[in-house]
Image 1: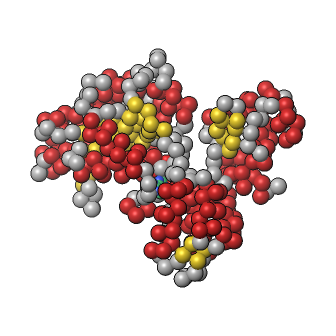
Image 2: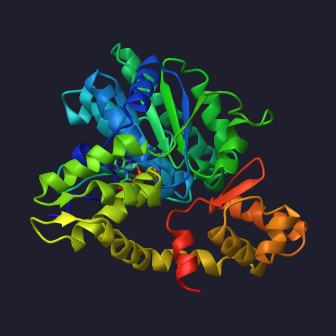
Image 3: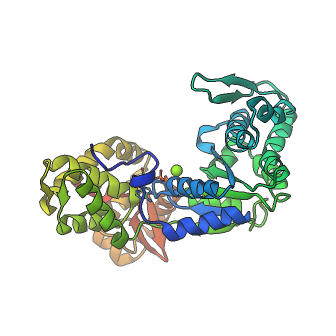
Length: 375
Ligand SMILES: Nc1ncnc2c1ncn2[C@@H]1O[C@H](COP(=O)(O)OP(=O)(O)O)[C@@H](O)[C@H]1O
Ligand SMILES: [Mg+2]
């Protein structure tokens, strides 16, 4: 079976490196230190936090987790919170399931609780309740992890993935959350987010409730020096080998971007015969496979661009650099600096492009190759 995985969480033997980040996160969770973990999508935030949460759980911390991407309304968020608090916090503290359900029976709005075939519990809150009742219910749910764990002298943490969605669920939600969280210094809150400008708006704006309420950790790619042995081991463990030159070519392409590296290796492995060694020459064929697999995603991204943005993207695919400079614009046929600036602002917001002191490059892995391959 192909030992490389992209898309799902990297767990157990799919997970590599991140030791320092993981250790820090586990300590923070244990200490009740709130953390914002920021990185563009597919850089390994969820995988890292999952791994840290498991380690914290092994230390006795009760960790509840919700993914705000899957909870488009307050009712859905309440249901997801109730389910994870029940599963990860209330149940481990009570031997009898009915006793673990008791706190949820006292909520302003009563959830419907269904026991699934596999024995897990599903919660739902109906629509059409008064907004103030839903708010009161959410507030109670946010308080529960700390209260339930504290009553038994245990520690609790709440992980919220894709936190940038909070403002889309309801603009009043950050205020409501913050009012509760600031009274729970012993509970560790972990906020994961992509979309830097939204996350900064939430945590770095002095007019916002979460201003300076958490320590910020920015996750980067995996150091290629640490990634290389992992790739070699994965090939070895699956009855194939990979040459040092091929590993270098892969990591040269991906710069250690976790998703891109696993994706490229997935196709490289597929192209390698059983018992054979993946050569550097196969890497370009694997890259074509990766581009085909990303084609739908890139096409959508491309269709969502204005003409100006497309020109800037094509220029950056050919040459990363300083698009505002007259020399760059002349060389790559770009129009006035103000147009370029406007395009870059949007591309940066969409996290397609990153800039550092006027120097810009395409952040989305494989997009430069895709753009150049279709000319
Ligand atoms: N520590 C890791 N080791 C190896 N691969 C990883 C690691 N973290 C992430 N990946 C790869 O990146 C992909 C995206 O990871 P994920 O945690 O979902 O990122 P994010 O939450 O930042 O979008 C995974 O499917 C996996 O292929
Ligand atoms: Mg994620």
